[in-house]
Image (cartoon, rainbow, N blue to C red; front, side, top):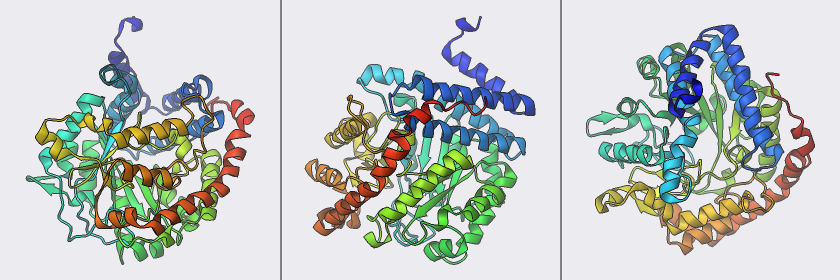
Length: 490
């Protein structure tokens, strides 16, 4: 009988069964083991992308860490009923289980797979003024993307790509106001989208936390720099206490949340300490963490704040240890390249591109060079997906394909996957060749400054010397060990 059901109906049946299972401890643990085995088969046995097994092992372990973190929250009653249903119905049912069904129509129309999500930064305004902000945001910046444009873009990517996942960045997203609407209205407008919102957290109070819990389709990723001294030094006096207030409110309301950590030369060792992990994952109740290394393009460009190659190596080794032995989802956006099969930008399959507060489209949040503008596209009657055919995006994706070994060659070191940061000569020359437009003055200065280009190229060369031995040890030479990895659930 089950064989006669459509794939959509089977997904719905699975989600309904999972919702029931999550409420009963023994069944919940059985469901966790089932999911564990499915992930193990997908990554370690089938390995459809034909990536090194050492890479697939890290991907499998990281995702099971996330599953186990969620199971712990369910067991402790720290997820609201609406949030539980949102995770199951949208994130599991559509984003994960529905991914194949959603991409097939696009593939038939365009000849290649679509991105999985957008990053939209709807406003440049922010209530803070952080040192080295990549977006150069402040309370004085008034650039805001109209509500009608934001909603049109989200509908386009949903209808054309089958995308049900959406990332909101900024500026500070919760200061967004346009056409009588605010950010919470966006979550209400798109109940079939699951939103991850990068926020400084200072505007989340008990009332907002309760509303986010009621909506059930949002997870805030709250920015921290470490503990109080590091956070307040970069973000302003008193910010750390406001962040802690927000986390306590979210935990009490049953909203799953994570942390977003900006790594600089000043805090690289602090952010991966046992004390910090115990505090945010244990005391505060965070589910996940993303590390974003300082990118020297925003306000007050300086390479001096970048983590050093040696620090990045230590961060990488610590990340691998946390994934394998600590059982938490704590991922560096750059060192975590194996988890996403390399760079995800420029509209790659399972990737994204960025739309900012002016409507400018760029390959990535950390590549502030525009190739088009959604307002102009709408005015000219051009669909959002047409930007995927821009020569810069196509060149960027070709580089990604070659680097991850899709053409039959050996993959490059996915611990240094970023064209902009780790292979800057390619990124700089491609931006110049294809006429990408700087999105702010600092980006223009960086593009025209030969010292900046040379400094970034030297950084990439030094990084290769540090990280290539780690790639050989942890991926290439670990192939036989990875092949013997068994499902954690038995």
